[in-house]
Amino acid sequence: MTSVSTAAAFVAVDWGTSSFRGWLMSAGGEAIAESRGSEGMLHCVPDGFASVLHHHLARLGVSDGMPVLICGMAGARQGWREAPYVKTPTRLDTLHEGAIRIDAPGDVRILPGIAQARADRPDVMRGEETQLLGVTEPDFTGLVCIPGTHSKWISIEQGHVVEFSTYMTGELFAVISQHSILAHGVETGAPPPVDSAPFREGLAAALAAPSGLSASLFRLRAAQLLDFEERSGGAARLSGLLVGTEIADVRHQYGAQALRLIGAGQLGRLYEAALKTQGFGVSMVDAEEASRLGLAKAAMNIWGAQF
Image (cartoon, rainbow, N blue to C red):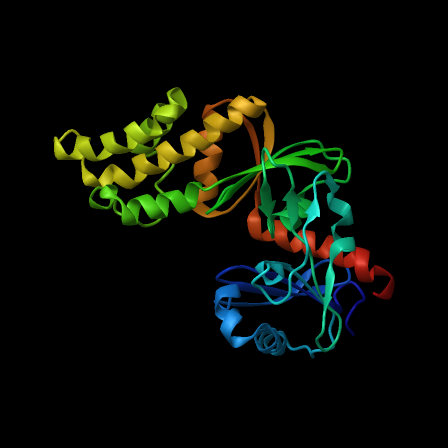
């Protein structure tokens, strides 16, 4: 006989730009089964979101009547249906109040993103807010870093997101390494190892003179042309320069302090090592686990009485 704690209660979905991750969840917040695919928002815009969700629900072995809670780009303006941003300052444990309901079989809802509606520092996030909910307590105060294509740095006070900044570090790496003169000096691939000397040197150069990033980027290629460096180290040095510039700005705003790092894989380890060299105390949490935990917390607030 299936226990109450492990009986299927709802489906949690992290729907990104290029990926779908779904988990069949128990009332106790445990993942019972999962289904993944490459049917992100970009795939679904022409082909439809409902059919993709139906496919993954079938793979999870449940019907369309199972409650579904979604975070991420399915709620973007160009997604399934826009889930309007809630604005800072906002409590993370009230995110569920901004969820919108989709006209679909069963109870399907999409969580909102968060907007920093300030003319001097406009910013938005969608998906990361659910990760923040997953790894913070209701009274949490501190700094959180979420590295990625668009890295997020979030300041939280007593469970309220008060301000945040987005850095296009990952996207800049892709654009510069593929569509600039540095395409000749960078071999793209996985993030460099933590102990890479070119990464450490690029990091140190950016932290010492963050305003000189443009000149440092050109020197990367010039050093190779003049046989001071090998092309094999170009990606690591470029990563160091970009990550270092990001960290230098954060250090200027907040100073070195203890923080929670929501990361995964080599990129997460790279940020952890870089931050520790600058005096940040780092506690790392797995990014996927953070999304799943956040969805579970929000689902309990929405449907908990029914489970």
